Image 1: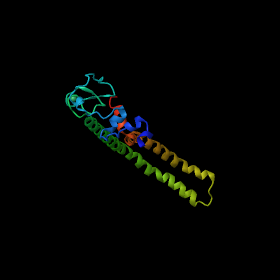
Image 2: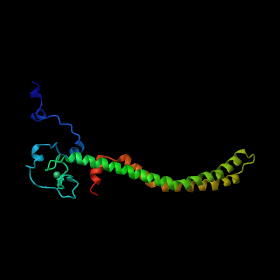
Image 3: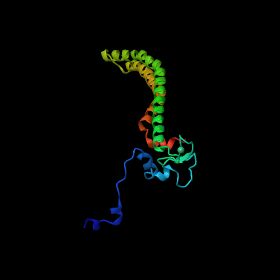
Length: 185
Ligand SMILES: [Zn+2]
């Protein structure tokens, strides 16, 4: 028979419930914990250290509770609370990124204006070298100032934009895992 073909452990396996807060459960290696015993606090009274990554401060009763518990001992839904905190954190990161980007854009305006003014220094000698019938190596020296100024401006552009670049990279790699690891820092 089919039952005889598998060991006892395999036959006992049951499909895991899909939950909204599966991130929390997966990260903390805990199983779904919405039993009534948890809600009404009939379990042990041990509480985590408030500085621990595995702790959360219940918004309803103010007590420190294990993050892996779906509900606080007062009945408050902790997984919902941590998801709200995550969404607020992401929204705050986005706001900060927009603020940094606006500031960078404002500081970059003069640099980009200077680039436009420096362009003739490069384009002029290039035209001269291109259309000249007696082009010599010394004519190429006239290209140097234009290239030098544009290189300096490009470096300045990169320097001013560095915070926006970092902030953008942070936003792209943001995840629930990052939030859980950094929220107590
Ligand atoms: Zn509570």
